[in-house]
Length: 220
Image 1 (cartoon, rainbow, N blue to C red):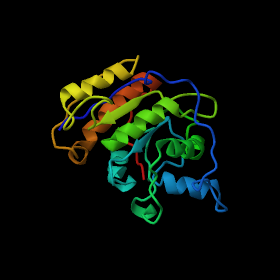
Image 2: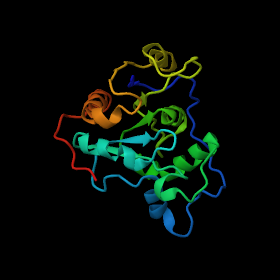
Image 3: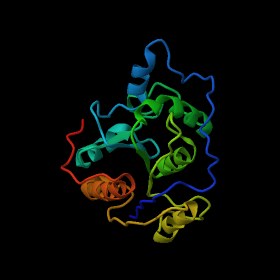
Image 4: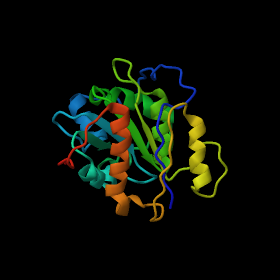
């Protein structure tokens, strides 16, 4: 199987985050903390150098990506997103509107964007990660410093499945540095290549955010 790591801000972004909207996904009486726990169940409570928000594949959930947390270097908080209709949120209706999803994420994960941040998406999650990188901003206006897309062809590329060509086409969607890294193992290569993928992510984040090398993080 093939996967790729793409660096940089996607082209065509207008520099503004999504406007707030009134919808059923707003935090209720339980408060923002419990709402954040629903969306980002695995995250570090202490000080971190940066965060990577991870969007799962179709029908995937945050637990599937939790092992990647254990392979990350110290200071990198890898945060799988739990989407409605998945795992512990199976009783919630799935979100079918990307703009509504981004509106909600903009409000929900902004408290975690106080440090440099990036987005990672696998398969269908790569499409969400791409849109998140285009539209989401920290409270002070900072944008994602990095975008990682995995097992998904670039938008507008005719395909039956990811291929080296369709992955390299992501390069036309960024004005920044870009590279492709291929892995063996099928569509779910992440289950066997977690340590290598984590090293690749750390390498690019070190260049983007100036992170020093370190030991593997003891992430939950």
